[in-house]
Image 1 (tube, rainbow, N blue to C red):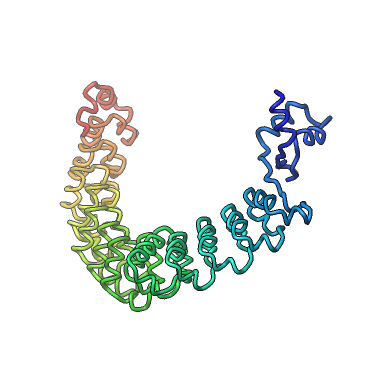
Image 2 (tube, one colour):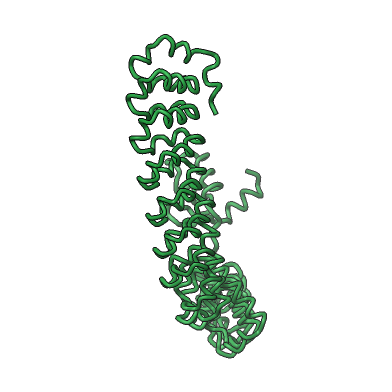
Length: 412
């Protein structure tokens, strides 16, 4: 170390994270001498130990606690040190302002008459909204103080005079506070829950905040519709009557097809509504009414996105030969969801394996033993041979087909 660094370390105190005590470098070295190498002690000092903020007044003499210059220096470093200052200096405006500017909690220690000083309260509000709770009533009514408090946190709304809230600037600050701190809305004055614009902002931030709306707003159809248009999840918390409202549910479905699970039984059976939702996302099919599982257009709309949704179709539809043929011409693997009789239907199976050789897996045992069916499947995909009967798996002709360069060229 050079001489200047030696001097700084000799005067500087840092906090040891292991015992929370403040040390100079020399004191630290003496504490750990013989336990750790000097290089490790140096690393601890430089990398792990933050500079300790001195507690100048806590251990000061009565004379120093009454010394204005000494106290000013102390509170500018640590505002809370004001608690140890002489009473006269706690009533000194400059000293109090310096302390509160460094740490708003120093408001606990300033003389009570200074709670009537707007500048001191503003210094506290620059750090935390709770500074407003120290202010005298006339200061709470001060326009600059009230606006600063509201911009600091929605929690301060209860201390802002109602007459000020009618001003445009305060209105903007209120709405910004709702957006910034939606989780604190529950602690806000009840008047806010009747404020349509504020509650819409709250619902946009968190859907369940709709439950905080006043009884009048909570039953207001236009409010609920607008809230749902912002966030479909609002539908989960509204009265049942709105889950049976086609326009409200449609607005939710525009954002997420999963909103159908929240709809009334009647709307989940609404063919037009459900079909529109299925076209946007087949997964919604799981929430549709059972009677719609026999609707050809609806099931086809889902199957076109993912053939596995055929599993939800009614037995009657999965037994419909023409319907199944229509599906497997595009998705041979869908054969697995056809009824057993159709999986034993030669034309149906041939159609499926021509599109997707692996569909042979779902054919009846008899058809998996039929040479032409297996030939078509293997030609489409040589791996389909693994689903053929034992005899055909070792059939020379089939083995030649599976090893042919043309094998798989029919794959779609």
